Image (tube, rainbow over all chains, first blue to last red; front, side, top):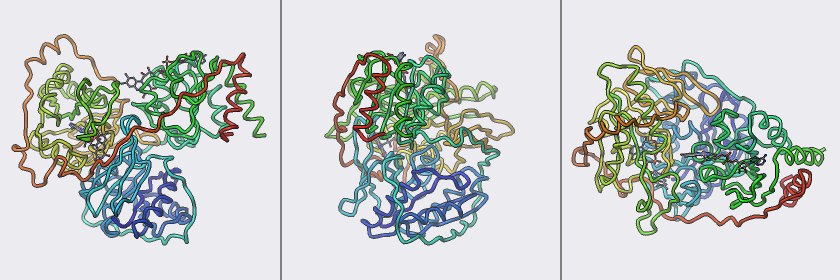
Length: 325
Length: 262
Ligand SMILES: Cc1cc2nc3c(=O)[nH]c(=O)nc-3n(C[C@H](O)[C@H](O)[C@H](O)COP(=O)(O)OP(=O)(O)OC[C@H]3O[C@@H](n4cnc5c(N)ncnc54)[C@H](O)[C@@H]3O)c2cc1C
Ligand SMILES: Cc1cc2nc3c(=O)[nH]c(=O)nc-3n(C[C@H](O)[C@H](O)[C@H](O)COP(=O)(O)OP(=O)(O)OC[C@H]3O[C@@H](n4cnc5c(N)ncnc54)[C@H](O)[C@@H]3O)c2cc1C
């Protein structure tokens, strides 16, 4: 592998922080491999987003603003990516580890006969080979996985694993030719955005998570949201809170929910069951507010404050707001 | 209509797991094996589609797994699947996503189906890349993360979750579908189901039945696990019991300041 290709996931030109993290990292890896850093942006809004990407240290941004990309489910996007990879030659393809990122990765594994390393938090070049580091089994093991084929390899990368840093001399923007002779079967009849404008949980630098100890839906709005806003973070939840219908499942953190690794995780009224722990244990700093000092969360928190969330959290929010003012 | 559901047999999600330094594979001894949780949702979806379609619709479960775990599949039969097929061969050990999807695709072609329902993610490997790879190997439309699915006029109609909301998608059959956890809780096996499962067949395929062109298993894989280590230990932190809410808030605030988090 010589080059690095970033698959840019976006919606009508709006993308997430992970895109810029990958663009930054692509340059660093390409430099070690002695190749070039590319990005591929497809579908409605691609041209506008490509402009924004030129602020990052990429060599080439490939664009195809083709309506088929949004009309058909992923098939045209996979065709474009395959074509871009074959044109670039031996490459490591970086894909965000998201729902659709995993689909793209799987499809390219078969198309390119490539290996895939999943949920990658670090990439090392060892003797010309690409080695990917991933926390596995809920973070119980940190594995290093080498991508064997010399031509193509794929890494699905965890958001927040790398820093995003603008720079470089400004990438060239090139238009991708439409792969010929393709037909597409899965038609997207409608595409609905929910909860727009909110910070993606996986990308938030701070996560304020609530559990059964909050007793209902209302404290998520009145207690957690103001604290999250004050700290520039997002609200998350335990499964108990999601199961009770207090928050949508999209906020659930843990084994059957999302995996987050923010700088700061504050668990409020969450006991810290193993299935919750595996989704947040790699957070840099963990603070817990819990009535019970013996709750399992105390075993892996940096600070546990024993007490009533309803008394502590509003005071904390006030202190932070005052410090910011 | 014939529906096939893929089910991975994984170590109990609630058990502490680790990797054997000698084989670099998951240690399975002393840990109970279960149906991968996501795959129970896939099975639930298949059973619902069967109930709605009626007639001669059948549900087959398929697993690629060591033969010794075969009987775990009885649970899927007790939940309502009609039969099970196991692909088992020492030559498959150590297969990665590419090798797994390649071998599974050949077995599934042999079994035949109109609809293939796959789980979204496993509890052990957790790459989530098998469904896409499998769809490509089989040349099927690939519709993932379904929270609702229906079959009408020979087409699959799906409401699927995305990272930002949801989509409705239509595709012709045969197709590959994966299910989200919002599809609905998997049913429990009834006593009648458990009794009936004892009489259902679990047949076995081996690599000799598949005539593959490329190697699979560890040598055929495109990835190699070269190292693994436990994460750095997170020391037990401070536990404080403040007098009141304001004192508790101050403790956290000072701690965040010290860590430069505010
Ligand atoms: C297969 C499987 C998968 C699972 N997946 C997940 C998952 O992805 N994510 C997940 O979170 N769980 C998951 N679970 C569930 C998990 O086992 C726990 O049941 C769940 O995490 C408990 O949620 P909780 O901590 O909010 O509730 P509880 O365990 O009930 O804890 C509530 C805590 O709140 C404290 N408390 C109560 N009142 C207050 C107050 N006023 N102020 C401060 N503290 C208070 C209590 O002391 C207690 O510690 C899964 C379980 C299974 C079997
Ligand atoms: C700790 C660990 C880490 C690993 N990391 C990687 C890695 O980074 N890259 C890599 O290529 N391989 C990796 N593997 C190997 C990988 O687990 C196997 O290739 C596995 O067979 C398929 O991948 P998955 O478990 O990630 O499946 P996923 O893609 O998460 O599975 C999605 C769905 O596919 C179906 N499915 C998957 N496998 C089977 C099966 N054997 N039988 C029936 N249905 C199945 C199920 O319905 C499942 O819900 C890892 C394995 C372990 C134990």
